[in-house]
Image (cartoon, rainbow, N blue to C red; front, side):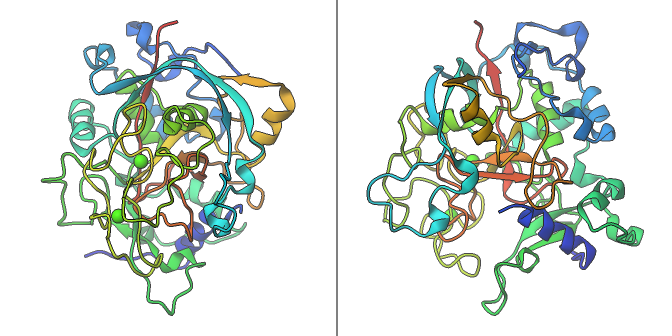
Length: 398
Ligand SMILES: [Ca+2]
Ligand SMILES: [Ca+2]
């Protein structure tokens, strides 16, 4: 039976969502198998930047993962992204001035600033259930959503002195979307997200459900830690937020979406997102109510699928709403930015979050417009949800 946690955990979820609104050439030795370090496992990105804000238990689980020697040498399913300079941050093309505020650049997307990224390889699609299963079968890795909730971590997100809930409310769980009645405020995220026990990547709809027949769907209910663990096994890493946005733009400059500037309210569907009245109704005009199999929509200019929509995707960077401003003060072009060394939230800075990108099957112009190239969202690294997955990258040799 699917049970819904209430009270304290709803509060935590609400806080998670309402909390607001360089190093180079570093070896990832602490998350790599030191004995088998190869060219592909030396990265210019420090996976553990800001390690002081990460959970040591989950990091230890990552450290125990051995990199697969064959997979770490393979570029199968990856696309080479030619490096270059771009203007990172929110765009308002001509004709978009009258769009709702939620469909336009947010404060944390500004100012636009010049960034250079080096060549890299990127997975052409989101990591699928079949791929994640191969990883788990090979390593025995247990995802965060399959572990009891870590009260020591959760209480950091709650008001001081919040009493510990009973153990039965701290059992393994993940966040699932449900349509609220129209009488319910969409501003209370507890009205449309619920922690459901027994939900995880293997059984995305709870006990009794499975991923059978869903091999080519993106894996979901995976936390940032789970994504990093997979990346380590595959001899890859998570993209920086800058790499992610550069890749999403698909070679176009200063456009709103990876396909250009055509709005999302037409009859052509470029991505899996929500049509209807978010979060109450979904007319499913694009053919998919929740996740879609990979490659269901056209790729962008780099040949990458579902950079817009389907599931949000973890990046390696900590989220800071003031990071773009800080970069813009540093100089003309920032080379391979890796995010701040510490996350920053305006309203609840106790929570350190990782940036997620690209939007999901739930995005709509009247809410998050996550399918915009520049849209930023974030979540605590231990959070897993029905609409968050990931893809990996690898440095291209210099
Ligand atoms: Ca859809
Ligand atoms: Ca996506």
